[in-house]
Every structure is written in structure tokens, then in C-alpha cells.
Image (cartoon, rainbow, N blue to C red; front, side, top):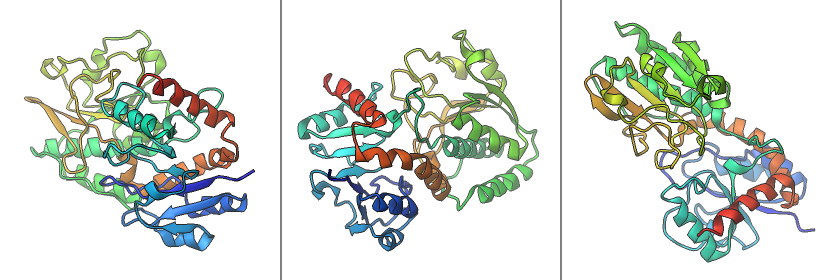
Length: 353
């Protein structure tokens, strides 16, 4: 049996420096007989040299379209939107199965090229739980962005562009200094999905900063709403992966309703999905403009950045790669249950294109 050729591509979107395989993880795969190619990258938090030292082949940056047809191309975020047919098997976050506007275009490219998408969001165990997730660090970083927004509001300003931090302790210390410089009462926060990975990350940073957290999960939301309690907190964090049965947490009229709410941190960040439970905005925010103001008096801002873990790229990459590695080992047999489930979901959706 020919073992897989895994091709780790350089990311091609702004402010994306994470990677899903570390040099130590690559060494594990190489020892099992895998062939590993890693592209050079001008931005990846781990450069090519440590991979080369472990025995990986090194390829030019963004050369994956010329990779051998049997290579499995592995990245995290979206591919360039150039319309070219996709002939390879790709491991990535596709964001293509929930009615997203760009999802059909991506699937059309796979259909045209005969390739396959193994969506990282749909690599699940036999209980339906994702085998690897950036959730904790998405929550931690997303909380930081929303709190930065609240700090800026308290100063009568809009938030500055965000930038990555070397680690969580540096980020926490920076936020602590900014909060201590204010002469206002501390905010409180309501977290939906508090028992999950994302909610845990949000709650951990809030607790480090002394922000009181009200944690909600299934028991508090199963009645389907409405949820006026959300409007009675300064900060609201949506931390759940939405689906067809997800209730609306923030209704379209929330900005003009009497409220204490000042900042919404939509960590799930799926504004163009049919299932978006935060109905006061329709587009993601960016590193340059991290907040979208949806009401001026009193102010209400939404933060919704879709690659939050890149704010802490080394910690989030190391954590995620360790979670994913056992599943990558199973690429020795793409009929293994976790890969077969992801392929079946892709096949189901490609039939609709």
C-alpha cells in the first residue's frame, strides 16, 4: 500500500499565520512512512526550516496547484477565489455546507476538477464530536477583541486594528493595563455555549480580568427564546456552532430596544449562514476594523472575526495540531471512519451543485 503524500500549503489570506501540523507531528508521520511536503511561507508562525530538519521536503510558497495529483493538500483557511477547478483532495475549513454565499462556488470548483473536500469542521468521532478544534483559543482571543472594543467605547473611540500576541499571558497583561486605566465600572458578560471549548476560552479570559460571567448552555436556551437576559449584560458572547434548530439569540430590533448590552462577540462568526442566531449584522469584521457599529446611541458594536486563533498563532497551532495528529495518522486508510464520514458529507453536498 502506498502511504499518503501530505502537502502542507502556505496560507493565502491576510493575518493567517497558523498551521495544522508541527515539525514534531510531521516527524511522527514520516516515521510511519508518510511523504510530507511543506511549502515555504513568508507568514507562517513556524517557518519551513524546522520541518526540513525533521526530513520533510520543502516546496515553493503557494505551489500546491502543481502538486502531484495523489497528494492530499492540507491547509486551514480558504483558497484563493480564482475559480480554478480543484483536482486534489483538500483538508481545510471549507465553510460550504450551511448555505454560505461562497460555499456553492467552492463546491462547484471541486465538482469541475474532480477533487474532494475533507472539511476539518466535519472530522468527527463516532459520537459526532469534532476530533480537533481551535475553539478554546478562538474563545480566548474573541473575548479579547470584544473587551478591547468595550475599552475603546469607554474612551469614546472605535477600537484600533488588532495584531497577534506572542502568548496569552502577554495579551492578558496588556488588557489588564487598559482596563485599569479606565474610570468606569467593570462590565459583565453572558456566554452562550459556556460548557464548550469556545465558551471555556471566553470565560477563562474574563475570569483572568475580573469580569463576572453568566454561563448558559443547553438548559438555558432549550426553550427557544426570546432571551431578554442577553440585553441585561454589557457583553454577550455567542459560542455555539449554529444549525437549523438554533434559536435567535439577538433579534433584529435589539439595537433599538432598551438595553445594557454594548458589545456582541460573535465568536462563531457565521453572518452569511442561514442559521446565524445574531440578527443585527450581516458581515464579518476584520483585523483592521474589528468592530461593526450597529447602533450609535447607546453604542452597540459587533465583533465577528473568522480567524481569531491567529491572534495567538503559536499556542493555537500547537494545541490544534496535537489534537488532529492521531486523525492524520489514520490517513493511511481514507476509509477509516473519521475520513469516510467527512467524505460522505462532501458527496452529499456535491450532488446538490
